Image (cartoon, rainbow, N blue to C red):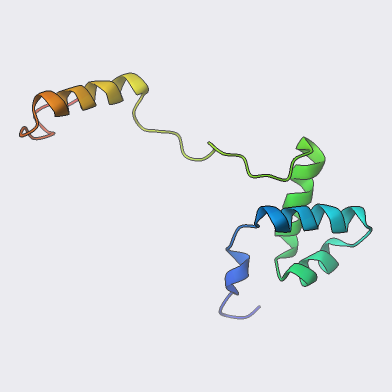
Length: 95
């Protein structure tokens, strides 16, 4: 494996590329052939196909990731304190 990885391994697939993965896979191409055509990692192509098989959608899921640290109620409270006491420090109003 080369010391420097190609940038394409870290970029996400566009909607068009996701559609191509699904189309080529349904056309009988292997994961390796599709990855070579798109210039992507085989595992990226495989993950895209797995998502298509599971959910029948090739689009990215929004809203997933690290959950927020504060709840909506705490956020409203902090915002209210900031508006009421604009010059006060945050340490004064600890949650």
